[in-house]
Length: 522
Image (cartoon, rainbow, N blue to C red; front, side, top):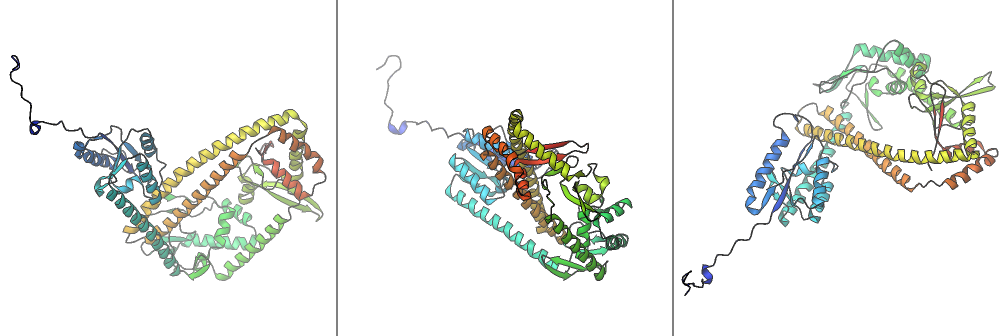
């Protein structure tokens, strides 16, 4: 007996109370995404709704140890077609550093709209043992059934997108075969009937089109016609798109005029690839005039091709540029008394739009070529200049890297915007009961833009890889330049041109006569 505490009895096993093990703490990150900036600055928008839904879901799992992180990850006005999103990248970085245990979104498409990218994200989450939850779709990848359901849903989503694309192409082809104009800005001479989806003749502009054909057949020169109509104050087509945005027509140029003169819409036809069909629009130019213009264009183009092949020793063709408008300078020539040949380099902007369009004067080809060759000779003979060129080559190479990085970032943003435009156009197409032709044309245009951007991004990647492989050796540079002077006099003109292009990246001619020779970094 214990006199103080009283009798002590040993408790039975059934009377013992075992303390419950605390639930494992699961730090849940909320990720939200909004594709557009519409209503972004309102009191309550889509991001707020997503955030509240995810927070409520996490609160319902509090008994299982789930808590919401104070920091939310929100991408505003960003497409789901790429993982290059600021908030998503921050989330992935925090996952790598072990600050997150689960990711919660409202729907799967808030995380990604691409199956391949979504699977990459899922693989990333699995590598770091991250649970992924979609609130409104009852998906939790903490279980094998949840992971299976995710893959099934994303496969159907991609299948639906591909079927939509095929249907869009089929609608475009069917519309063209029926002679319909499938959308976009109507050509000069026509207005768009948005109710019946066909072109209507604009009588005022139709007279302009007929006059353009007449002027070209009379003067036989695109640039002369361009100068004439610009002097009259004529402009390209002005129109208002389906969203109510008005676009003013700009002044004519040579390329626009050439495309206008070969457009079969003016003779009541439409094209689908190489096939030609009868269009629903009225003809505003007779077939004979149209064919005469095409024959003349073909003859002029063939003559220009012959002139370009007979280059008369155009040493700098392809590398000489205008310092004012950064356009290429074309090699041209004139003959006096059919015996004396005078060669020039002329800015292509001036060629297309007239001499008034660019202040850079035509340069004597022989003088500028001699100047560039002497620059190469001087560099080869001057050790200090070689060192200077070497330093500048290093600086140019670094500048090229920065330029490519900047261009890649810009194109990536452009591709995000185009992806979002394509998504909205596809959604509008699925719900459209009218104006389908306009939407089809817009979808094709956006896809072409995305393809162009993607090709350029691939080129940038290849250029960056090439820069990474290029090592600049000053001793090799000295040896190469020292051989130039001895070889020049015995070279064939084609070999001379090849050597100059191997050494010189570009020649920039300013309006004030200043000439800058930029050498290749390699």
